[in-house]
Image (cartoon, rainbow, N blue to C red):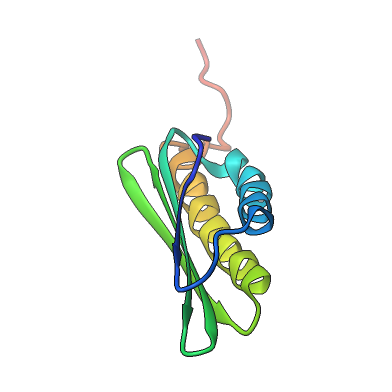
Length: 109
């Protein structure tokens, strides 16, 4: 996965938040086909910690958004939402062209 870009809004940019988000993003790498860009937006809005994570993978954009009272929990929830989206898409691509085999007898020559 490419190096994510970070945007911090109304809060200080800390290495702890960056490292936590990068570690969580590594866990969803197995669901990505061809990740192009990853953008993480961490914001403080009306005493709510918001995390928005955007991944562009094979021309499609996936967005995970979460709000809570703790930024680390918001990051975890946004990553979980993103992982479900990517996992669903990977399963669709994986099973797209599979056709069931017929259970009939083999042809007689």
